[in-house]
View 1: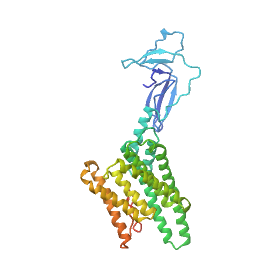
View 2 (view 1 turned 135 degrees about the vertical axis):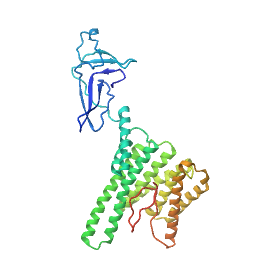
View 3 (view 1 turned 90 degrees about the vertical axis):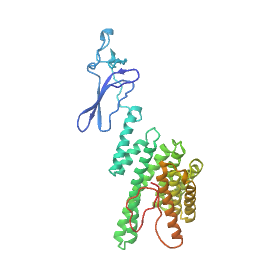
View 4 (view 1 turned 30 degrees about the horizontal axis):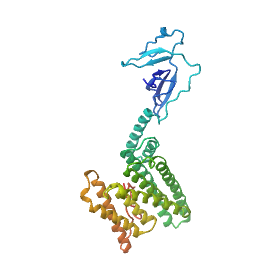
Length: 366
């Protein structure tokens, strides 16, 4: 049984499964506030009660002049409430289930979306995972660390698939000597670019509207600013010459803001700080074409972490040492490239699809 804080029940509601027709929840709701929520897979039926609910005995004798079939239920310490007759309004107020932002409905909906995200991750359906976590992010609550990571993993895989596809098609376009095939590859690449831009802009909107403004602990602020830098970087990879410089500036500013906060508030061995240094250095190497800055940033982060390796706690040891290894791998690769001894691409800390031999994705933060 549900109702408002005054215990006034005027309408009966039932949540009915759209597929099966089974009732999954029912009760009585008040004319003022409705503390009831039907899941997205259900439809809502409601009506003025044709008779008092079986667990109430209307005391109409107390107020004989009032019409029947409207109830005031006053909950008492016992499971069975006391019931009184109330008049039925001539034009009942519009009835609606509270939106998902209402506390009780929102909590149930949020848990459902998080569970969907977990299932989608196990099934490797990352578009579904991203949609579920987008719905969670658009709620009023601050994301927990687990929820934050679910959001990050979902969109990393969604955008990562498009980045990998874009590299493959770009390579095919350059290699093709047939003008017809080249035109087809170009059109397909533009389609992928459009999808990639939509995904990045969606993430950036979530960051600016919902995540960064609410981020209070330093690690959350750095996490989201690094994420902002990452998605501007992905946009820069496919940007036209007219837009590219502004996008690069936006990416660099987000990374730099995160770097300054992490230097003041987080130890050098913190995995988020190390991941930021890793991805920021990739930005300098790939996007800005500044190997010197990339190497300096990566080496500084690695050396500072090495000097405090004995302070690592058990929980973050695995993540921190993994990112340190990626930093060292990038440094080795970049110095080798500078000496003309080899070719390759740097690593980022992020989940990536299977790389193509001719153009491996960067190793970034996971």
